[in-house]
Image (cartoon, rainbow, N blue to C red; front, side, top):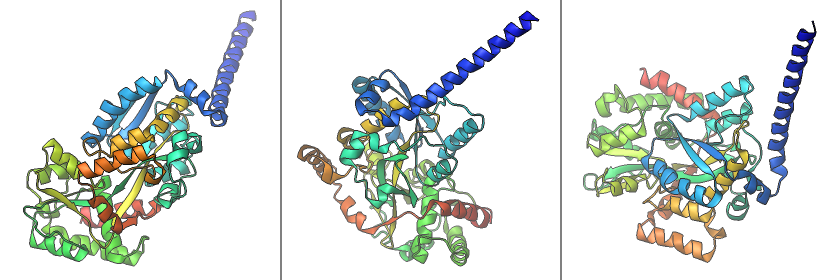
Length: 403
């Protein structure tokens, strides 16, 4: 009997200790948002931070692995581990599962996302908290009142995610073959029909393919919201051009990377990207011809901001904050802007930079002939609200892909 009581007491004590540890972990996690930055930085030292990122672009991966990772180790004493994923929804599903089983020490410390994935994460309480204002570089260099910073596909970010970069949708083409690229949706439609088999787009859920469908909708109907009557006409349009696509639209490249391969092999004469400098990265690497160029449709070209956030159960929240702050530094953002690295748009405001940092950016523009970026900005239109994306993707699968 005494033995049974002793075992029971040991179990109760163990549970009490575990509960105390969990409560202590939660308390420390919450207190991070109340600490001074110097304390947070000290807490971050020595931590290993796992950043989960879509891995479909070689230049993105190399920027993170070859430039960011070594400097984060050298300057912050943080070990950065990039975890490659194919679909951002995989991260969300992983976090939902961990929340269901009440896993307090998750393996994801930073997630790279935007749009519908942010909306889904926010609705399911998968994000940690409003940490943005704790970051020195966010406060110093980001235009926090700009709509394309405050709102992610129409969703208020509420400080739960921090901008990482900006993008604009472009079409990629060979200027030696296409002398006068289409200027609007009507000219693009005519070009597709006049060049059968030489155009296609990635199938959803590929991000670029979904963006092409959304932009087509917005260019056709001049609306950033969905109406059923317009959707019906939209599917009619997509089916109208379908026989003129690569392989008569019987199949679609499964990713933007596969579309790039078709373009580089001259199976199609156009590709597309949500990064205006993507094509120039490919030229520099020798994957695309020197005659490759980009164009936008003057009906309007989609633009968005992509973000970094911290999950509710991130094990190394202090380290995550320190890494995100580093990625917002002028040094990291300038390096990311350079087409020799990633070629991604600035998340920080040029106007808030020092004269020295402005000069570095000006030199990148001049050296790489990036003045065209200022020209295509005239045609930027904001993304539609995240709530419509799922509707469009499911509609395309039902009415076009399987038709």
